[in-house]
Amino acid sequence: MAIQDIQDEIIDEFSMFEDWEERYQYMIDLGKTLPLIDAEYKTDDNLINGCQSKVWVHAEMKDNSVIFTADSDAIITKGIIAILIRSFSNQHPKDILDANTDFIDKIGLKEHLSPTRANGLVSMIKQLKMYAIAYQTQLS
Image 1: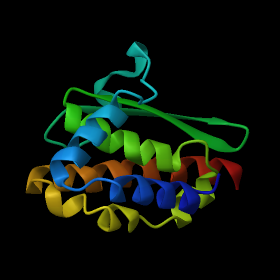
Image 2: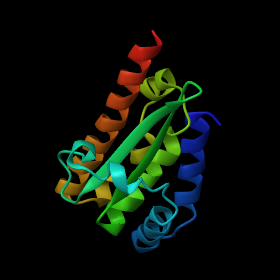
Image 3: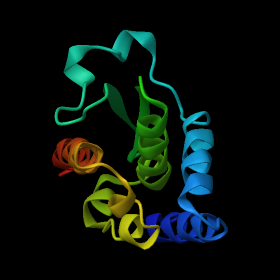
């Protein structure tokens, strides 16, 4: 499925909820479905800088697609990275780089995060795109 289609799906899912209390609960539930990072990759090298909570992300390339796994020590943050990984995992590096992230604004996520969590969100996106740049370079 294309990134835009996945993002549209996420927008539709979030629009089903009346208020942000329900949306936070949904994010927490999404965090429970996150493809978890293997313990061997839960290292300082895979920590995302700029996050208030600890967030580890690992990426590997399989069949010209980037596969992301992650974990966090905070339930909301785990939900945020789950949304991003759902959007970008199993995609070609170029598609990840070309994708925009305005779906985050459309679900109202950024405006409902504390400033430090919003900064962490930006750092997570930046890190996922950095992995895509590294893998795209290998393909060129």
